[in-house]
Amino acid sequence: MSKQRMVNTRFWVDPWVQEELNSMDRLLFLYLLTNDQTNLSGIYEISNHKMCFETGIEKETLLRAMFPRLEPKVYREGNWVIMLNFPKHQNTENPKILQGIQRELALVPQEIYEKAIGYGYPIHRVSHLTKPNLTKPTVRAYAQPPELVEVRVSDIEGEPGDSKSPRISGEKRKAYDELIAWSENERGFPFPKTTRLKQYRAFKLANQNELSRDQLIERWEEMSTKKFWQDNGYDWMNVVQDLLKKPI
Image (cartoon, rainbow, N blue to C red; front, side, top):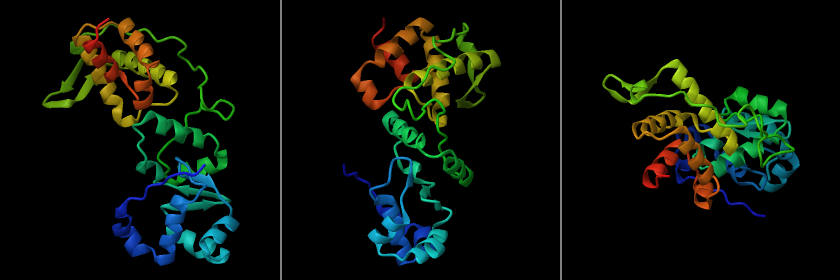
């Protein structure tokens, strides 16, 4: 099956492309973005013969001159290509995209994966998405939702003069983190780190509206069966907002 890859038009005005790459380097870079071996992770296996045949570039030139010039954006390790910034150009807020990336990373040999992380690859693979079980994660520590400590609204407050930074006591943070970990296990991949504060704010909103833990869990599990939420993704803020619109 053919794939579609979109290339941002700003590629041609990128300072690195303009100043560091010659015309053949640009051809190779575009080829690495768009050849039929690429995947959502940007780490894939491709032979030297295939690259040389499809680009018309000599093997010696490809390996000894051109790939070194593509560093630190692209690395060649054995028969593998590692494109460090590839995931940054994917919509990782979409759970299907993130799960697709994790599925591809699960197929990468450990040695290549460790090299990629060492070079600065931005996504760590989730250990419970294993090769024999790529579509359904194994059950980890949270077979059942952890108990939430009773929390007052005053337990989550912003720093003085800063409404964007919730302050949570150690015990309450642990309880919230456990519930977040349970939900990550349920959906099969972690929330992006940038949305962690959003989850805390969802719990604050739940407390303000006197929503119980059981209501939150029940609505989470209900939403997990709905095609709309499966396609678009959801988090605890979506759960709380959905409860406030359609109370149990």
